Length: 407
Image 1 (cartoon, rainbow, N blue to C red):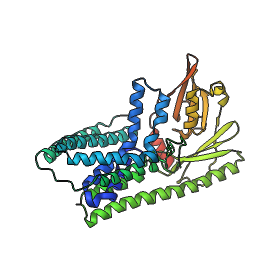
Image 2 (cartoon, rainbow, N blue to C red):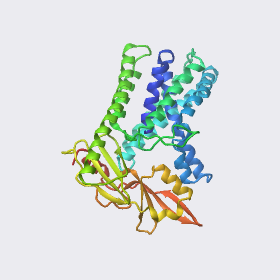
Image 3 (tube, rainbow, N blue to C red):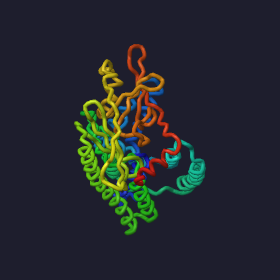
Image 4 (cartoon, helix red, strand yellow):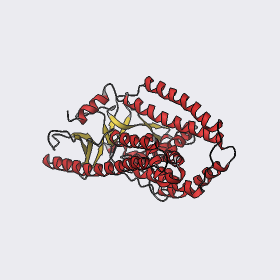
């Protein structure tokens, strides 16, 4: 899921694991642990920009080894020893000061990115200025905290910190498995992508209540009754909401199966996945022999039946000669073979990952309507693939809201 949600989950699990002994340090290092797996995005993009890898390698590397059970079971030992060494280091105030600012910078970036997406890829200057102002205040707060007074001795072992990191890192890929993107949980032994498709990559109904509970818990001192209540209410909400999304997905699946049968559509398999920001709007994609049948359904639709499906020709034969190309193999694996090919206006081929649906609900989507799309170009006898611009167009979030509300 999005970075802010993973920070919240990591902080909550860290507090639950060792908050009684470590206090706010458990919450802080839990938030750090919840962020670490997603550093693979930074690694992949950096290597790509330096020319060491191509775009498809970077795409496949996200949710790779850092999101595996192997990583969650090994990395906490190293991190626990490093953090324990840090607290016993006489120069720890410098690291604490810089580290605190970096963590806020990451959270501030996540907040601004969410508003950037909500604002149809326009910078929200009010949020940007607001987080900048908070950053200045925190700069002086951390300076006074770490340099103007004697730091308290931390009575903990490396095992305590390792336990915090284990739970914050371990729960990160488990939550990501609930999304459509998929998570390579069994690396380095298998590249199988686990994806339950029961929650969106950003779900406000999951994240905001969890965040409010965690902030409430942070306001109280460690080992206080109210702090424990707020923490476990937040964790309880997380578990209950995720459980409900599985139930809701089951109900939505029944609607799609009933609708496909009513229209006499023969299909080999199908999948459903939630749209952004909630669990009330879903996209369903059924695979036929020569085409895919796709439609959206909202929990607020008047009738539990889908009237029509849009037909998306597969056109897989258009890339038949490139089946052994690395780019095609990667995209077929990435999309779980839910992909279609179309000819763009500029003459190039475009591969559409149908798991994420389209921005609009039109019967004949255009080349720019697909959420995940890749432009295919032949260069020097090889087929290269590049992700297309995610141009959502004007008013797309209003359309998304209207469709979610059943209109």
